[in-house]
Amino acid sequence: MCVEQESPNQPDVIALIAELDAYQDSLYPAEARYALDLVSLCKPNVLFVVARNEQHVALGCGAVVLEDRYGEVKRMYVRPEARNKGVARQIIAALEARAYESGCRELMLETGPYQPEALQFYGRQGYRRQDAFGAYPEHPLSVFMGKSLCSPTVRHTQALFQ
Image 1 (tube, rainbow, N blue to C red):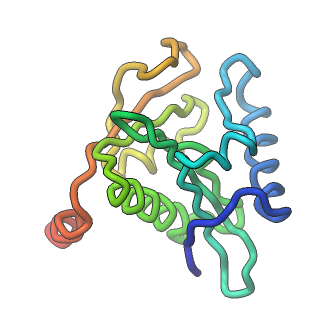
Image 2: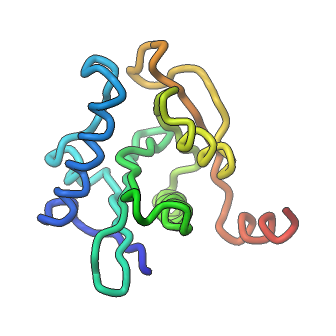
Image 3: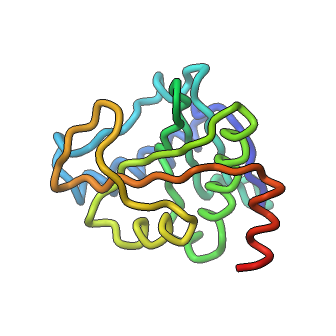
């Protein structure tokens, strides 16, 4: 499997994003969803990565929107058949490394309480709950999390001792 920065404007990636939208639509009302559309994902301040298997099938994706003082993780999704195989871990690691290389030192995200697997995943990756950030309102269907980024070398060394 490989995780590379790609354009989201590809038919198989658009289908992946549509799967994510359908999944989130089944969990949350429209007013509690803060998804980025395809045009927004193609902006120059967005890092977008795709995980593909050996047959070049898109298994998952994720994005970071680079703001002035932080980056925001968006559109993290792994197809159900590819879950629990390290795909999400590789996607978030790629996003964190690319964000760090772009000068970002803090990542934040908004997810929801009806996604316990996502909450556990982000917690295992070092993200901690925090208050709302940016233009987000406090909302009972929003969970806000953040993580300070350190250099990839330091992160690798820390992982060896955990």
